[in-house]
Image 1 (cartoon, one colour):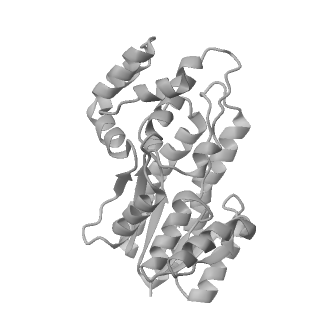
Image 2 (cartoon, helix red, strand yellow):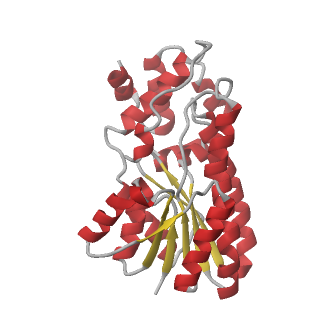
Length: 295
């Protein structure tokens, strides 16, 4: 029996992943800050004839993470798969994002992962096996405008995960980095504003929202992301990075193919139509509909 822990399982990718893994016959523990918010998770699991064990956990609280991990180990005796999914979004340019926002986002998106790795790795090391899935983002591979704190947290998570993969490989523990593009989740609805006190970053914010608006015309489905996570964990041909969702494969692969100068040049286009045309030329993604929706 495979024992899995999925953090942030009360919504979106986490909820879909918890249900997907339980439907595969795994024993799944889904963490959330408040068990009262787990009603949809319970309903989704019941609809497919499975159950997910809810666990209280705040990934920004070390004691909470340690207690949650201990609860799972006491009940199941092991952790085979840890999906570090819990996280928060944040909009704002580098200049206008308050320091407090950087601290909050890094605490959840980066240190939350560190807390769970530090709690679960000893058990995985003792059993000589395991897989840790860190849910990053395409924003961990490109300097997406208008999301400074979020981008910083995901780039940091990418580097941390690369190091972790090397450190844990001798212990028989695999690391997976998941890089979703735009997926229809609650995080989108929670991040619809961006500071612009100086008035200097109207274009940057508009283009950030336009890309998401375009992606949300045909977004990735959390269930599809969950299926990718299952494949990444169980495949006979493991790889470090997996991408999915609207724009995921295009943004991650094509950014690596273009020059840094081409990336920076993209920021110099004053006309939105010219910007959209160049964006499509570079990444094969049409963001023009996003501008139309915003207009």
